[in-house]
Image (cartoon, rainbow, N blue to C red; front, top):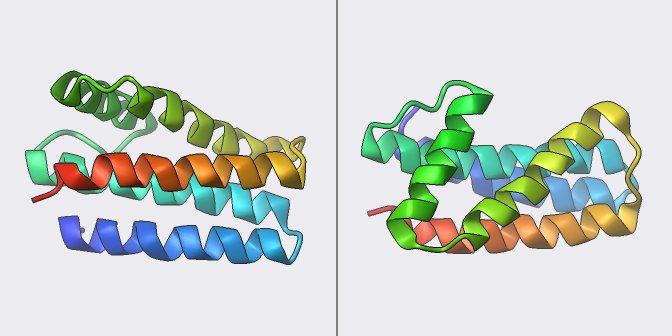
Amino acid sequence: MTTHAYLEASSVLLEQAEAELAVGDVRQASEKGWGATAQIVKAVAEERGWEHHSHGSLHRAVDLMCTETGNDDIHLLFQVANQLHKNFYENWDTPENVRRALVAVRRFIELVSPLLR
């Protein structure tokens, strides 16, 4: 995929996550929130030529973004999104906590988007 395609997918997935949460599907909201996060990381990584085809490579890309920007909030917000991914499998989180996590995902996207040209 191209940088633009990853960026567009991130936006669509975040909208879908919020829609899923609105109808009470916490599991799908969680996975789509994680997907929105992963896609924006892939967009930045694709543009910079960084590996981004595994879960581990996404973590390494986030580390590089933190180093580049000096902003450790990028890492913290990514970890919140990673919890959403876990929730898809475990389904232990509450709708309110997933709502809070989606706010964090939106903030993550806001912090990371300026890294794109």
